[in-house]
Length: 330
Image (cartoon, rainbow, N blue to C red; front, side, top):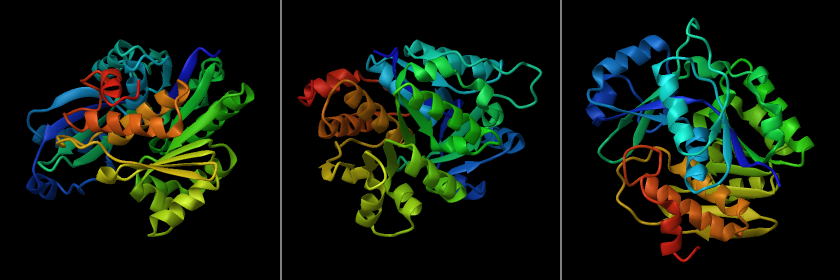
């Protein structure tokens, strides 16, 4: 038995969450509902104008790993932070959830700081993310703990991490170590604009190494160059062993081995959509690594996503296992 059920690799970020309105987005040139990469100067400028904010550890794959750890799953995380205030916040919050985080911090003399994502949450619950990658952009092969990856049933790769000079080499090293030890690879596409930037690299990775693909409707349509969801789902399912695609209030689609399940969403009042896909992946991965059927794992994913959008922030505030039990899954 391996030490870790899932090890995630991604952008180690601290989320700065602030409630704004559509006028604020327009005034500051922020495109609604997507992730935009910004530099340090832009990050400082926006931070000065957003008003009261809440700082919580984030990062897509880190949110997923924290969610699995919250459920009691043995997890680890690989991501780069600087030895600064936000770096300390990130490390403390992730370890407090029960995840292993041992990636060496970049020194205080490093020019780039710990990455942060300024999340503007509008009254409709939509989030517009302004991401300064900081030192997380420079995660490289030297940061990959081969023994940790080899001792993992799954590695979970964050699509956002494809933005970086050494990211692809880091992923390649992790994949080879995982596969050589009999592990499996999950990938999340992260964002349709991320897909557009790295479509060819994603395509090669999916065809050659990915066992489980996570995406939402916009991402998978972009990935397969179509406006028809069924066409995209069919194309993806032909390339991976398991496909899990979320579709907001319509729930999720899970496909594997010629079978397909539609998982209804669990109704809730949306406060902040940040992390919905991340926690769907957490519930789903916890389910399959604990022996649950794919349809049950899909329901767990939808329940976890429903919990996370009911409050501000991308870390669970309710006991997810208790919610699973309430819905007859445990």
